[in-house]
Amino acid sequence: MQNLAILFTGFSLFYLPVFTLTHFQDDYKNKKIARFFGILLMGCLALLQFLHFNYLTKQTATVVSVFYLCVLLLIAPSFYFFARPVLQAKDDFRWLYLLHFTPLLLIFACNKNMVFSLAFIIGSLYLMWLVKTIYALRTHKKQFKYEIILLSMVFIIAFAVSFVALLMPFSQQLFYAFYASAIGLALLIVALVVSNKPQITDTVSQAAIETYAVSTLKAIDCEAKLRELEQLMQEDNLYQQRNLDRQTIAHQLDLSNHQLSELCNTKLGLGFSQYLRQQRINAAKKLLLAQPNASVLSISLEVGFSSQSNFYEAFKDLVGTTPAKYRKNLLSPKQ
Image (cartoon, rainbow, N blue to C red):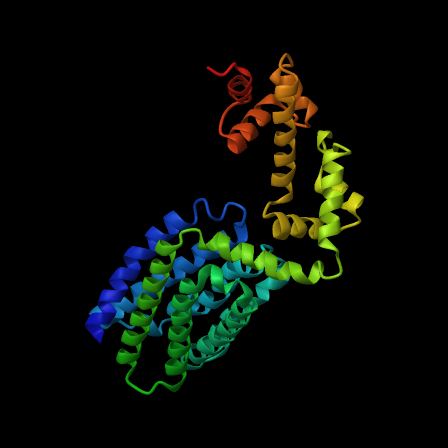
């Protein structure tokens, strides 16, 4: 068991820095809270495995130190604030949330054995929150069926560790070998999930948005609101307003900002800004052909872009070519 534990701690100490450097670059640009706590979580797990490795190979007392208990108590709240923006689409942090870290004070109020047990009890409560949250996303399970099976194994491992930690049915050395192996095995499963579906974070986040949008749109006739939105764009040409924002459109539709965002995300599969940009580019494509002598700048301003550079960037992103080439390809005589 000890050799297996050493192998898993070695894998953990290699994988965690690699995962941190690769996973938190682009995927979390718009989830700053999740990114911060995700990196903190990876750091805590790496420290924990390093202390386990020292204990298993050198028989040092690192696993009964105050530092070890601090790291142990940081893991559960760090995981919560890392997972919450992804699973519940809530990337915010208020001072009141610091209460999640108050269990760290137990180190100064209780003996080490009691703090150790309380750390796993607290961790079990966070795991129950996680199971409840994942269950709320059950209607989207077809999108990541394979991943849910693997992640369910991680939950089972975590619950098993908590159960064993509280009962402690065998020696301390065997427990830490088991604990280190469990962390390594869980990280191996995470590696398999991420390699199979690199964009799983975005997939789960989108599922969360759709799930939690149900309650706010329950009393709304979504199809009617979509028709109204289309009318504002196609008949009233509201997209031509350069300073057009979500609040203006929401007011026109008699919706809240949040309801409009959810309507676009759940029914159109686009964020509001993406939808508006798409409307402007569609209008620009028609004008480029209808007004062959008009400059690209004048057309970009007419459809609501504030600058020609923004127009070029959006046009190339959505159409795959520049406005000038698009016009030339469609207006030039066919050979």
